[in-house]
Image 1 (cartoon, helix red, strand yellow):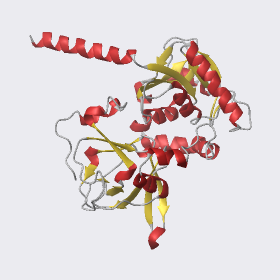
Image 2 (cartoon, rainbow, N blue to C red):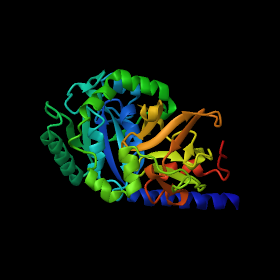
Image 3 (cartoon, helix red, strand yellow):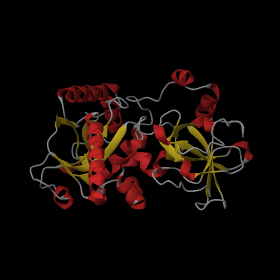
Length: 350
């Protein structure tokens, strides 16, 4: 009887996954080292999952060693499974352009050879048209002084890379960050997209329409909301806290604790790469400001603390955040974070 119940559950779960997949689209993208293009998409709302691997070559089931040797014709690539109702293919391409050097025909940064060159592999005529239009848009923007050489070609067989390459930025964060900073990628992207012409930051006028007065003053003018008189300081519900401007995931209720300060307090961010740290010398003191990586929203400050096991206290403004309860994560495109809350007993506040 137990086996029968288990089989029925597996069938139902399988059908649910298939139903979800029917609503998803796939974008196949090559941008050099696949470690570096995976994490920006994992952080994007509407992305269901990402898989790194190899495509475009002439050998079945190639290994990493074979692809990296340049003998198989494959490129290191990634497939993005996304919900077009929550994030458009055009937006996926916008994110992609901002992770690469589209003018380099010989590789990407420190990695040289065809296996590291950039490409967009389209899965339909509609994707092909969108990719060509997106490339043309970038060319006309004047963002780069050199020709855009990223290939646009039909998608072929995609082979998943070995497990240790999947989400490498999570499995080996120190080595990953060392590689990124020493490859030249981070320096190039920071310089190239400082004045972003293809995907400009939302204008002040648009933000004023989107945000209420306190949200605008906090996120855009680095103001601070009143203690104990803000939306989430005493929120005890389980869920995810995202940037109110960009929607990028920042903190979870699992790491939220009662600091007694009157502002939402967290022991650590959900993903370190979504947080930017800046020195703040205002009010005649030296503090460390924290901002969101994609939205560039002022969030608050981080302080040393003996009250939590991480030794850090992230003191954040409610006005910089939007809270998404666990039961709405899937509907709002954050299904990948449901696994964090699967345990019945959520970790208690430090």
